[in-house]
Amino acid sequence: MPNTNRNRLVVSIIAAVLIILAAVAVRSLLDSPDTEQGQASTTTTPSSTTATPAGRTCGEVKGVDADGQPVPAALLAQVRAIHEAACRPDPRALLDTLTAPGHELPEPTLEQLRADPGARATLALTLETAPRTSQGGHTYCAPTGAAAVFGRGTHDRPGGLTAFTTRPTGMTEGLCPA
Image (cartoon, helix red, strand yellow):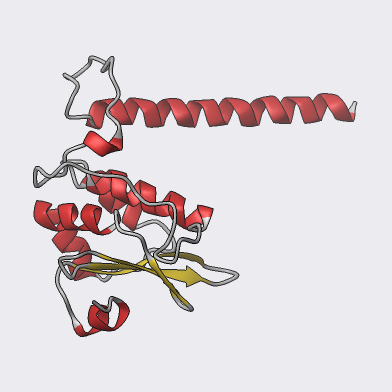
């Protein structure tokens, strides 16, 4: 019967999703600085009170751009994942996120984010600003002059974080006018 095969497929897919979610939950618990090894945390910390590697408290990612328009859902999901990872003390989660398809950061930028907790804190702070929208994508501009640029992508390539700088540059001065 075709329904039986379809039902088995649906059950298999649901089981696979549940296994993946369980693995993510376990990894989150093991990577969490608030838990002792082997013990689960009984509290959750909202991102508004998460401390960055440099000791600054993480804020919230904005859901609207500088013009008050909603940030596209796919971009918002990417930004939130990167922000959450940048707020963690261990750079592994951030580097795993930034090496996914669509993100095209140069190797020196990835190395800086791996080695420098201040750069990760700056990235988190930068992603808490309302992005500026342009034809090429979205740019997050921090008051410090730091900028994170998300390219739009194409029909066959996802958009993603394509540039990040911790200080003003010629690129950021054009994208982030005062």
